[in-house]
Length: 403
Image (cartoon, rainbow, N blue to C red; front, top):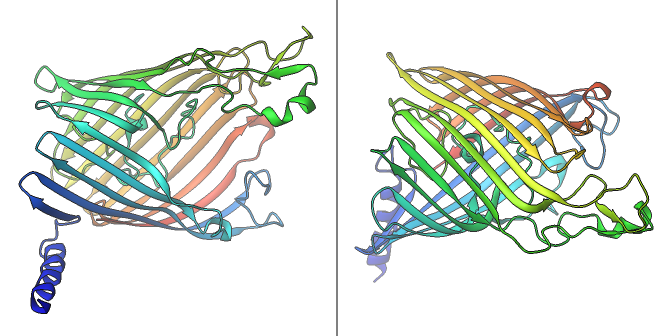
């Protein structure tokens, strides 16, 4: 028995290291069940300076406002996925984000970032239920491990009740016309009741106001995306911005999200006395997007990519989250080195919630996205009046292991 257990352990280790392409633990208990385990670790060292000064909501500088250093784990993830009885899939991702950021080890917790089960009745159709990536654009569905940018530019995706761009719901994703058209969409939870409202401060903000009830009829949120593939296709649950596999992919997409009375208004409270200067009611939540994506394989182990998006978010007239925005990521790889630039811009209707980021850097691929080093410079203003805010500058070095 001891020798049997020893051989089993040796076999498991051998399976992990026998091939340079075996970056996941795969267990096949029977012909009907296959189970995989993967991990992602992104360790960062970061320098920060300038900006509007340290605060409880943005503690990204030293207390004296000088150059600040920070070493932390941006993401520590464990993925469990597999197939059962050929037609059923399952997926669970546990995430520990920002572990040790600003020296904080106590309040950061591990939580469920993705969990769903799926059914594949036939090729090119997946029906999934659980806590799911919300469709809107190519960027919205990017893999955190498969981008050239250290931090994918999703800060301006102002969803109404998402956690990590995800919500509970049921969706379908599949292809039509020999995989030229991708359809992905479904029904999701959205915002309900008093979620997202600053109810404890109602009396202080407006003594004659009562809390606004968002989505009082309990209607779901609808979301979807349609993509046309000019060259190649992407069949995964999440998408890379550079695939490093010698294949070309070019596509365009349009997407949207909608929930009836699914957005809270700027001042967050209904005025029951009829006084002016307070919020009037909740509004419909609407998000619209259009995007272009290209990852072009070139001769001589070279590759070019671009991802560009435009957005309109509508949370009601005057809201800090109502406005137009755009994001972009562009990169060029020659061998193991890739140069990249990325950023975002959002113009709020109220002008109080604007965003602007410009970033660029280098990637060095030791083993594709499975093992890489990234160095990037950022200049960013988030959720501020742009003319009244000073840009925060950061230099970030990140080491990624994904296997």
